[in-house]
Image 1 (cartoon, chains in turn green, red):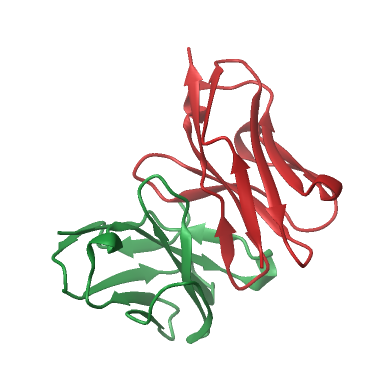
Image 2 (cartoon, chains in turn orange, yellow; image 1 turned 90 degrees about the vertical axis):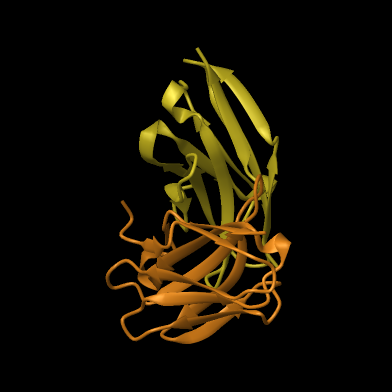
Length: 113
Length: 111
């Protein structure tokens, strides 16, 4: 158990809809990162938040956005869903003092129909 | 820019045999390197990490990896495979603000 929890575990949406995924970080971790893992591929970095500010972003369009809250929980929002957004979305929390080790949640499986 | 390349998308070994999963990295700064394991329908679990210091790092479940700067490699090994080692393995490199993963290697263990 990593102490990182994600909700929901599974989600089905239709193309064009919007979705919000949630993540609760490991206690004391002030950094959260989100990844997209398509079937059969490695996780792809979406963005990272540090103390409620975006701290880095991968090659994802602006319709992927996020929030980090004072209690370090976070959200990933995706607007105008496309079929290719179907994937496992992983949240990971970390603490710089631990050498950038990222602790992953079990993920949210999003299916876009 | 940082990246990793995992050589071999599938590796199959017999139970009790040596496991060797290959990873090469590219980094413009001293890298932090990681190996993670993913079981079906689960998130990623850290096996081991290299930050600084000793180049041979030991992880959980009997796995170890050696950082070789001259070869830009960070291969994962285990002397004797167990059926429970069957999973997807990911090598990753980090410079702090993000983590870049390889495409993964699926390990199959035959009885």
